[in-house]
Image 1 (cartoon, rainbow, N blue to C red):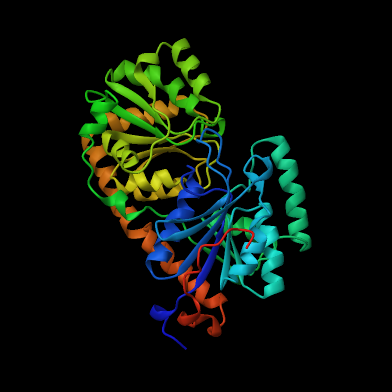
Image 2 (cartoon, rainbow, N blue to C red):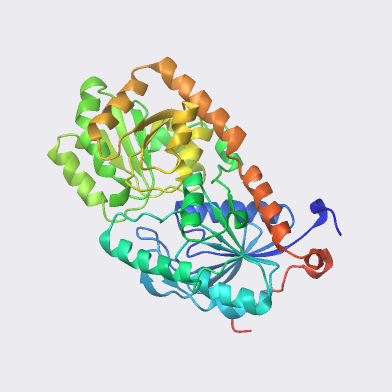
Length: 411
């Protein structure tokens, strides 16, 4: 049998969205796929033509090579929330006959459909859970509860292996009936470029924040992300720190108008700006230009932006509803406040902004923690070990895993 360093797999990653769509899960799939491809694996992402709310629409279905990863896009039908149905991937998955199928997102139709293919072709399949266990909305709660009952009955979710982001996810999977020896915790990770030094001067000039002390909200403007809490905290913040300025960066999922109206009502409109979604180096420049990151979400399984801020040496002020809030608390990389409490959010922000030594110490601990525990390379090391355990030795013949020729979906 080949040594692990010479093993080359064909891997099918299946997810609702993919680059250039924005979103935490999208970037996780991108980072993992690109690192796997960099290591010599033949990586295929099977995804939909759909994008999350607030993103620019994509073109039609088709195949393309994106940064060394083969991306196959299929029309989406019957979209509800993040659940989109794109069954066109099934014949392509059968044709590819990958060594392992890696599905992203719990309670997603593509995972259950891929499960039928995996059983028929005897291909190992794993599910990467990205949160969603505890929805805050009644309709979601009822739908998810029904789905989980089916999962426990063994009708759906017959995966060979499960990956959670946190120990809390492990506990939830155990409650759903998944055996402990068929799951692992693989936390999200910051891309290597997040650790690089970025000069934010041009970014500050473009967005006219050169003389501001920037508090960064980086993410989708969605009600569950609670951008309104930042606005409610702002009157107290600017009363004590007049140069404080909140920069909202991310696609609008329905809250931009509410944020602007609330800011006007509370007389803090001059202290905020929404600049829409950021891409590539601008994302890093926004982090470099800020003093701290705020994550006031009511639910957020494992926000990648928190790790990226830590990699840039920026403290994070996060609500206790954010999945990895304990990382911030344990590593002293920021401050955790009670969810929904804008007064406590204001206190936390002010305590960091008014104490330069504390801010610098938190930033250094944040960066050290991210580098030690949350790199893409470390995450993919864990993934490869899981893949190699799931795949039989005969799958490791590198000669049979060349890149397929580009063909239309119907071929």
